[in-house]
Amino acid sequence: MPFIELSLTTRHDRQPHVEEALDDLGALSVTLRDANAETPDEQAIFEPGVGELPLWPTVTLSALFAADTDRRGLAAALTDLLPWLPPEALVFADVPDQDWERVWMDQYHPMAFGKRLWIYPWNVEPPADAGQVVVRLDPGLAFGSGTHPTTALCLAWLDGLDLAGKTVMDYGCGSGILAIAALKLGAAHATGVDNDPQALIATRDNAARNGVAGHLDVHLPEANTTPPADVFVANILAGPLAQLAPTFAQAAKPGAPFAISGILDSQQDELLARYAEWFDDLHTDLRDGWVRISGRRRG
Image (cartoon, rainbow, N blue to C red; front, side):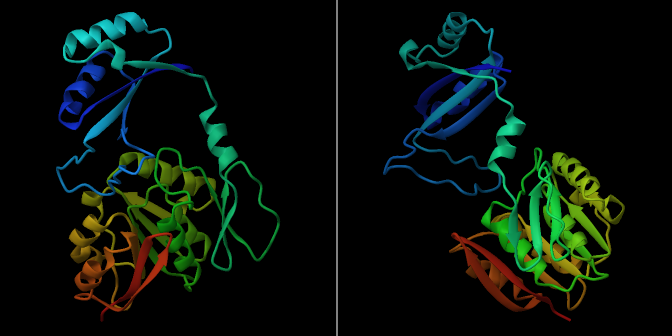
């Protein structure tokens, strides 16, 4: 369906008031971006702290409204709610109707990881090749399609393991891509854990699409009582990786191979020191500015 997009730029301290006003007026979504994007002053924000929402000095908010929304009425209502906002600051644009699923599928192509593993979009039929291990994927609303360097690093690591008959835990499973890949590579059972219920839905759907639903369980973190796994992998962010290190140590059997990613180059030293308390043979691999740490559970 088509939409109207309303964009405006404001100081970061006024952003919460603007976003609240847009929500009150019926915005279907509100997106924030650096007003200086694509200029030398652009500042990247990768990972806010717990309870923090760091923003740029000036923020551009883009709100989507239904296509039949009265633009003049919307502009008048917004300036009534925000008297300091000049009407000329409001920029309207039409967002045409698109088949968003088709747009994603047109941009997503089969990719190889390691020696055997391939990730295919669900609508592309893979060739009959006994040497290929194929995962058919539709990420849906969850993170994880293989295109991000951290996912690629973890997929290549799984491809290099002997997973025959093993149990695998995928913490922060997103689309389920790592757990499903492990099963297709020979693992006997996998567990996916994520704090986003949408991720659990996407993981179940993708497991069914790949014919491995009967070998995969999914849980929210607080509901996960799975025994320690033979293989452990987590692709999240550096902050949670540091906080959850003791939990991950308990989730991996003694001697279990493990890998963590979602780590920016420059964040690995702190994590290497943190994980050295429970894991041996630690080493790093780098791809496009992102790092994977792998090793083995002590014991």
